Length: 207
Length: 207
DNA sequence: AAATTCAGCGTACACGTGTTCGCTAATATT
DNA sequence: AATATTAGCGAACACGTGTACGCTGAATTT
Image (cartoon, rainbow over all chains, first blue to last red; front, side):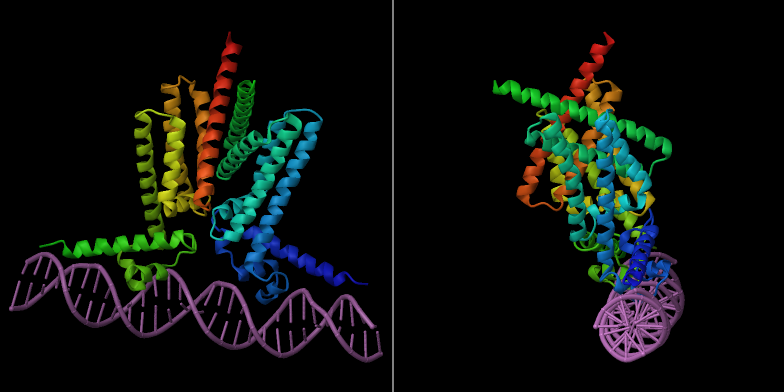
């Protein structure tokens, strides 16, 4: 019966990841994250850390991956709910803000490493944002019949606005977050109208 | 003749600040900034650091102050260019991107501290961005006759897009920066069209 | 000319860090 | 039942960190 050992290993691996997340806070970022402290909180000896990750950096990249994955799953979920009817914009932005609320530590990590010190980290986060944008582009092209070029401008602008608003939400009170949500929705709608107007403009020039 | 000594002190104080900035831009962020390394690069003994700053944090706050000052210089510059006439959008975005080009270290610092670990730093940077936005709002209200509410949405969206693009520019090659500049201008124009469409929409509802 | 101030230095300390190396004991394989 | 594997541990090492202390020598004041 193989598996008891592997299960236990996976369990303490999760414990390490969880411990790292716990120690990530507004005051204490990834840069000042200590192997020894993480191991201590996970309940293992510092040296045992290496049975699970080669580096602290490998742990960090795992965190980034998990964060991006969670975000994408949520947004896909939210898009499926749209099929049932309702505003795409509102439900997508709301989902995003809920993610920020419920996964503050991870989102903060993503933000910090986006302009952080490690190039590898930066690229990893950039890849996550590109995933986000790419799915938006596909939606605009498939469902809204935008040209790909315009859709890319459109989606990229939205991504920048939404991520930036998410960053502000980290320091905001619940009331401020609610206002920020509405503001962001309104801004995304403005961008949508602008893209629509731009498309109409391009069409009229062609004929 | 008093002043020789004071002048020398100020000189090494500047050397410390400069050394800190050099190390910020290159490999380490503020979090992993070392008193000893800064002192070494400034050409003084580690212990002499305390003749100029009580803490590393005091040095950090000084850096942010200087960064904010430079950013304000940018804003003043930008405002003057707008006064001369020409495309507001193109000249504003271009000026901003030039600032990023010419003050990479400082912009990186501001960016990092914007989602950094110190609340005080975060608020300071946020206030700088709000300055930027506020001037844009004034322009939209005074020169373009927008309602204040809509102008705020509009300006805030633009600020988010431009700062986010500036962040991307840090890792970009000159060619990529050029493309980023054009992309950003196009996106800001989309937002402008969207705001215009939104204004028209609001008007038609009133009548 | 004598006295005072003080920027900068060298030494020293206590502490936290990442990482290496054998070892143990429980699990898995044969 | 005998053997091989391996998650986890404890000791130890080398290093970088912030900073306290007392000293020196030049600039400044008296």
